[in-house]
Length: 237
Picture 1: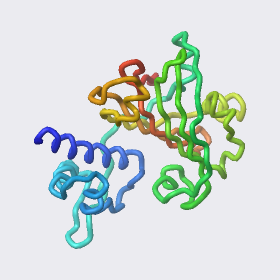
Picture 2 (picture 1 turned 45 degrees about the vertical axis):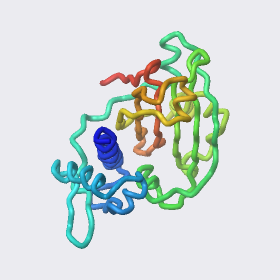
Picture 3 (picture 1 turned 30 degrees about the vertical axis):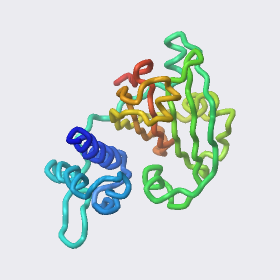
């Protein structure tokens, strides 16, 4: 039981830190209350308090009596490196990249996603879910949010290939860098079945915000990697 409690509070702490570093919660923002976090993670308020206590001790969160818990600063991170897209990486390694688009819908942007993308709340966004394969083996699951107003010509055909190649080679807009926040996790039952691994196998979740050289945000993407077979790699300039 003790090990389970430790895993829970660390998961909450890691999730909050990831959201702060990506700009989901910015300096001065209130994070959800202990009651809300307890309901979200199905844990006690004691477990939530242990997670937030750690971030308060690090100076990332600050409590104000009678008001709530605020973000005081983001964690110290390295400068974000340039990225190498999945398609290019597969080709470089001699594997044939293929992509299956499970979901491609239009929806209104919630406030926090809008903040990350640099758009207005309830602006139209694409919600995209893709499965990425190398030589027919599932290596990566992607959930992506993109501005439909800024990029109205995105299509399933583009998503079945490479977004990065489309922006750089077709639209002529260079990608500057991608800001990664990486967290080790255990897969859900559904993800474990898709990857063909046990649920106790450690894998990697990476959330990233891709920045274009024109100053716009290309997308916000959450990746789940089949880590026993596919590692997150990047080239640092």
